Amino acid sequence: MQINRLSIFLMLMWLGVFSCRPLRPSVSSNEQYRPQFHFTPPSKWMNDPNGMVFFEGEYHLFYQYYPDATVWGPMHWGHAVSKDLVEWEHLPIALFPDSLGYIFSGSAVVDWKNTSGFGKNGKPPLVAIYTYHDMEIEKAQRPNTQSQAIAYSTDNGRTWTKYAKNPVIPNPGTVKDFRDPKVIWHEPTQQWIMVLAVADHVEFWGAPDLKRWTYLSSFGKEYGSHGGVWECPDLFPMVVSGSKEEKWVLILNIIPGHPNGGSGTQYFVGTFNGTSFTLDPAFKSDVESGRAVWLDWGRDHYAAVTWSDIPKMDGRRIAIGWMSNWDYATKVPTKSWRSGATLPRLLELKKTKKSYHMTAFPVKELEKLRGQKSVMEPGSVPSGTLFAEVKPGQPLCYELELEVDLSKTTANQFSIRLSNPKGEQYDIGYDIPLKRFFSDRRHSGDLSFSEAFAKDVHIAPRHQSNNLLTIRLYLDVASAELFADHGETCITDLFFPSEGFTQIRLNAVDGTVWIKSGVVNQLKRIY
Ligand code: FRU
Image 1 (cartoon, protein in one colour):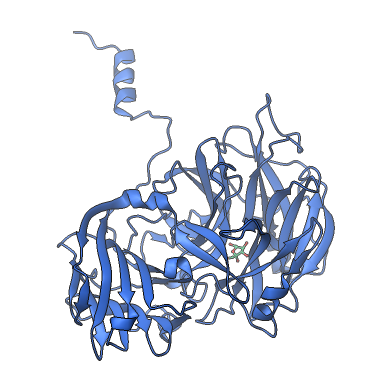
Image 2 (spheres, helix red, strand yellow):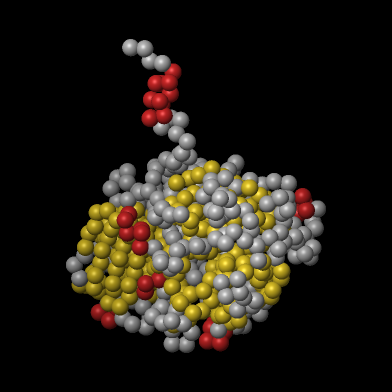
């Protein structure tokens, strides 16, 4: 039989060799420390998540990306999409640095009314709003390095065109830190609002069309933590759970200044009227005199911002952060890539006795990762009890759900302890008399890469005073994410054991722990 060129071509097409679809990540699932159900870049360096927007059934995730090395460098926007926030498909790089500078962090929106005029054939464009960072200006030691710019896509984010008249907000000439625009559509005043991090405060800007921006107001110099520079803001309305009351939340990432060291995420609750943000009187005392309210108490939760344009029918406010810390991010001992994202988290605003509190809890879609499940008998559990044993050659991929009855617990302190045959261990738990959670990676394996990595035990307050403590814990090879009391206290921390952790046990000090209910779910890998 004669096989002509066409049939060979068709056969190769069928085999996917000439597939036009972008390749799935060339992620080797057994690379040491490679997360198995968290987003990571296919290779090389990533930091902040950027431009998260939902459009036509896809959650877009862009991210600060340097495709040529495993350390920070000329910033691009890497790109991935997901239909469910669980499995991610890597797409080609969306934005490359150019003569105006590196592409720093920013946001993206669906311009539903085509205010920008970038739309085509009645289809609204996606518009990305980002910071240019000009290295030439930085080298010349002039302050006006950063300006704001836009780019658009009319093909569902697959290709991007930078606006010919960039920048849309030039640097005022005096401030070095002038970056990370988050843009939202403000329905009551029919305009786009940009919130921009400017050194020790934020600025609000308004525009009818994403192009012509006017300064509106500033906020923050005298509130919250000022241990470092403010970066990556976010602004969104939230209905207080169980009520009809609407509040506005302003997120501010800061580096350094986090109570456990380095970079972290703080937030403010108030009102926004289309021009200025005013703190809620009830929340004010939480953020006065240098006090701050933190979204996560671990050291590996930074640059967290939320998705734009999630349909009203869904109505969720979903955040994702960078799972690292600028104190040591460029030194962590991973090889072909560096850093990943946290799990996507549902944010909710709750009224407390005196103020407001934002909770963060993994999105329900993650339940589809659940595989083999083991259920514990309720009762008193002694120290050393094995929760799960990782099979040889398998990665540590688990979700633990525990309800601990503190009134029947005799131990003073307990933790979930990960360990390996090398004697390395990591503990994440709760101290009953001190009413605080802790994460201790001081003996968790490789600490050699940075003195800043495991100096202290990381601590976090418990806000509830009831006796039923609920814990949801995700373990993914080299990370732990704790969501206690349904996300009232969160801790995100990395660790790097020299050999994978193989055992998950209960550790209890001076007594036993009463477990009212306990489930251990083995989780599937997304790669
Ligand atoms: C936060 C940050 C941003 C900046 C980006 C540069 O981690 O410093 O402020 O836009 O990273 O990569």
